[in-house]
Amino acid sequence: DLFGDGFAFWYVKEPMQTGDVFGSRDFFTGLAIIADTYSNHNGVHNHGHPYISAMVNNGTLHYDHDRDGTHTQLSGCVAKFRNLDHDTFLSIKYVHDTLTVSVDIDNKMAYKDCFTVNGVFLPTGYYFGVSAATGDLSDAHDIVSLKLYDLTTPDDDILEDRANIMPSALY
Image (cartoon, rainbow, N blue to C red; front, top):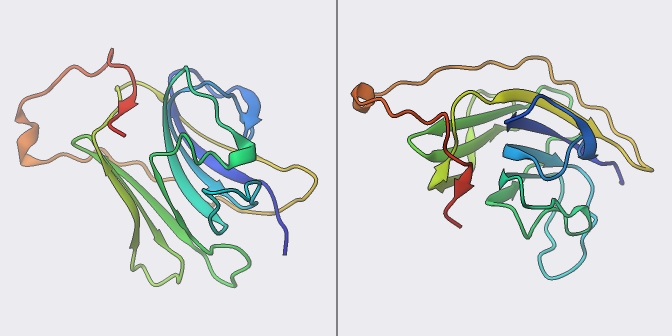
C-alpha cells in the first residue's frame, strides 16, 4: 500500500507559509514534528513508515525529502497510525529542555514512548501550526483537535527569559 506524503505540527518563529516541507516552508526556525506516511529513502538510513520524527532548525537546515529527513532528525519512531477503525493520538511534550513524543495507536489512552530527546532549546513566543502535503499519491488524515497546556513544575520558581534564544539541540 502506498500513501503520501504526510503532515507536520510546527512551533516556528514566523506564521505559517506555504512550502515544500509537508506544506510549510523549508529552512524554518523552530521545531517540526513530522508524521511521514511515504518512504522516499531506500538507503542506509531507511526505516518503516508511517514514521514520526522531530527536527529543530535555526533557519539554516534543509529538510531532505529524498532521505525522509533522516540526516537532520533528532529522533523518530515507526507508528502504524494509518487505516485504523479508531482514533489515534499523538502527545508532544516539552519540559525543561526535554522533548518527548508519545503515541496511542490503540485508542486505549495508554501512551507509548516514541522518543525522548534531552538538550532541546526552544524560545518562547513562537507560532503553533499544522500543515500537510501530498505528491502523486494521496492520503486522508483528520486532526480533530489540538490541546495546548502550560506545564509548570516546582522548579519553575526561577523564570528565565527565553524569548531570544536560537532553536537548537544537542545531537
